Amino acid sequence: MTHKVLPHLTQAKAPLTRAITAINEHGAVQNIEVPAERALTVYVDKKEIVTLMTLGAYPEWLVLGYLRNQRLVEQLNEMESITVDWDAGEAGAGVAAVKTKNGLQNLAEKTQHRVVTTGCGQGSVFGDLMQNLDDLQMPESQITQEQLYQIINAIRLQESTYKSAGSVHGCALFNHQSLQLFVEDVGRHNAIDTLAGWMWLQDIQFDAPVFYTTGRLTSEMVLKSAQMHVPIVVSRSGITEMGFVMAEQLNVCTIGRATNKHFLCYTAGHRLVHQPHLAQSSIKIT
Image 1: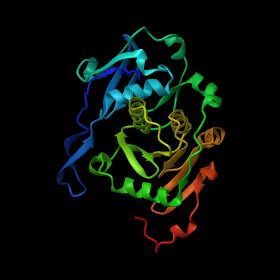
Image 2: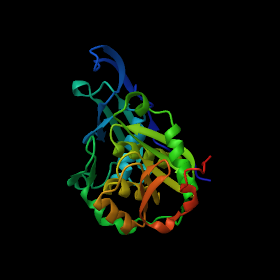
Image 3: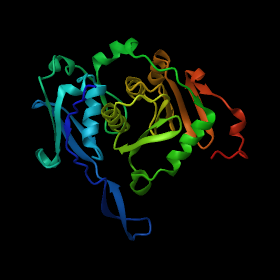
Image 4: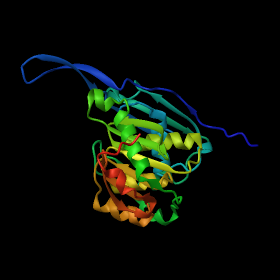
């Protein structure tokens, strides 16, 4: 059996919130928590790649997932280490230094054309990703309506920065209805990249993976889910036209407006096993 050598990762988790004071509608001073947004500039072999605005919950997983989803790195064994230092950058910015073993081929060419996507924090994808959609094959898994309701309820009960401070997006990975990992960040694209980095490190093949996001289902979110080989995406928000078109092309089931017992299945409806009787208000999902 071959021993898998993983890159060395620091564990530079930063505080997720900061205490401040604000004046409420009654003119009284109120102590509140706000998300601690910070800049993290990513360098690969001393070449600057991108600056991410992040909470800093799992910065090494975020960088790993970002490089994976951008297809800048194909194999874990290409990387020697990811070192995060929150005090190393200019004007208080953090730095993530990625050291590879033999350098990345065609790095300049791969990063030449970048598309800035929609959303808070402004995500981005490199242009040539759109040319490789046919290479993404989705597993033939399904989700039942009962499992969908259990996922929605699990998110409702999840302790989160959003509940204490607001102003963040959350993403989660489920297998069937079992929660595997929940991540919050300033932008939903950062949260899904963090999930991708964690999945890559774990090297686990889930038989029925489901991705949940609090944000809308844009083309970027659908594409990143597909690159994680997750064929079912659930959101409490809606879907964009390009997200819809891409999901149809990739055979990804997209389910939006998923709150309480309401939802809309936009694409790949064959992946959703309908149980309409569960939508009746008198039936409780446990």
